[in-house]
Length: 174
Image (cartoon, rainbow, N blue to C red; front, side, top):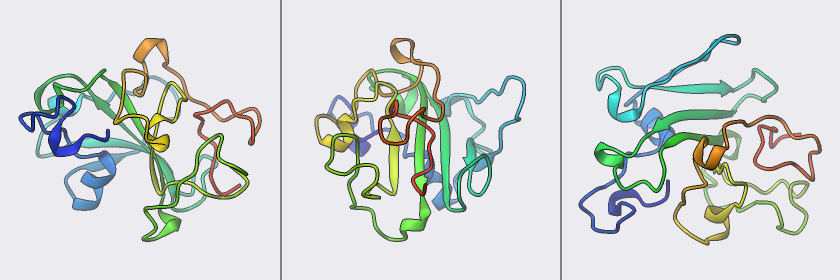
């Protein structure tokens, strides 16, 4: 989420966990490929064994995603370092490593020509409410951003690449 070392209460007393992507890059956690059938379970970040923390990774050349593009799924709950989160739930990050060092290209629904213009963030949180408030600079995160907040518990491919619904699991590289 977008509050970092300040925390959502801005007191600097409750810095948040780093994103799953950051922790992977630093070697602080392991990626797990979920089973294709049955129930998959991932412990809350605070409950994981600090010697073997995990995050689900889907894609990267599999399940309809090209190489370098994937989803990271982590379970963030309102306790420990994350006590000031507006809502606990599953945080889903959409990553496109094919963009290299480009961390500044913006892209979201409503932007002229999107998604055909090919613009998107290299690292984006798929917000369950589909409002794209983080991309639009409207806030630093809210109760509708995590999955299972306000009843949002599913994400799937869109029925139409240009019209959504959004968020979805479509590849950027169509």
